Length: 437
Image 1: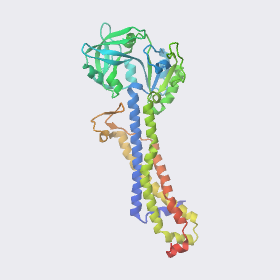
Image 2 (image 1 turned 90 degrees about the vertical axis):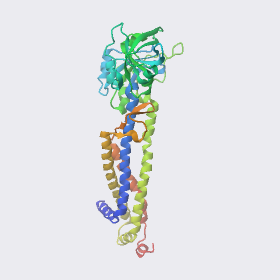
Image 3 (image 1 turned 30 degrees about the vertical axis):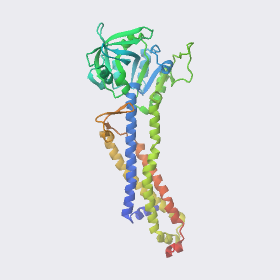
Image 4 (image 1 turned 60 degrees about the vertical axis):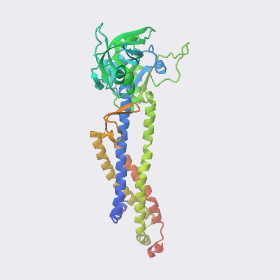
């Protein structure tokens, strides 16, 4: 095998111009694949973080009935010890209790149907980047103000624009509480937030969880436990861990108990990863990753054509040489192997050069990011499918993104060399040497 590789290197140097062009084609194909895979994985990671960072987080815990139909009275209570045990899990970075309700918020001039989010300010700020997304004013105080002062509220930027209010404005909120009564409260806007998540920015109003619990008559209950984890691909495993601590199920049960009124009446807790919470995003990402093979086929087809052409022309020029080798005793099997190894050497050298170049360029974009302005006419950050993206995309380069293109290119090179090798191994020595074949 070593001798065959040595012969392959020698034969490649015979026509350096042709071999150089083929090496360049292989290197560009592999380098492009490394760079593209790193960019796509960075894009996917950014999409998952954008979709889960603010609203859904990576794992959520609800009652099964609330998942089936989110009514304000379908709440749960978890003691501090259970919450501490969840927070102490190795793959959990932060948790946040949330109260969710729909109500009418406004003043004497305008009003809007609003999604009320009652949160613990410290917990929510650690579980999501909402505090960093404040564009005007400040985030909620760690403790609610003393009565009779108005309750603090932070509005989504779109909602604030619809109401035409800024920080310091006073608003009134009306909603139906869990006990059927009408909850109402005077609010003061202390901040405006722009997260890039359309559902939050256009419709959400953040309140202190104690104020939201009082407004909705929930007592110590809440609707959702949001769990943040840094490893986005391991969200299902995190959901399993959280479910084990809380005695919950993972995912929505197939059958839910139904009450006399035909409504769901199941208080069992369910833990769901972001893949189940946002299945459309997950399905798109799976489809996106499966399309990598089509990308390989399209890009490497060009390289394969170049390899086949190079080896075919090389074999054609050396037919008499091959005839002499067979005439003096070289077996066709060994000649076949020599040409295949020669093709593999060509593909491997080009692939390694391309992998090195693609890795270096990708590492640059891992550190300094890639300007997404070349793909959009929007300045600064932009949104796609309701997910906010920054103007610079930071690549995600893993060892597999380098190794896989090299191995596939090596396989493509071997396949591309089969035809010239088979044709050369089947030649007849006498006619070939005399030039009659």
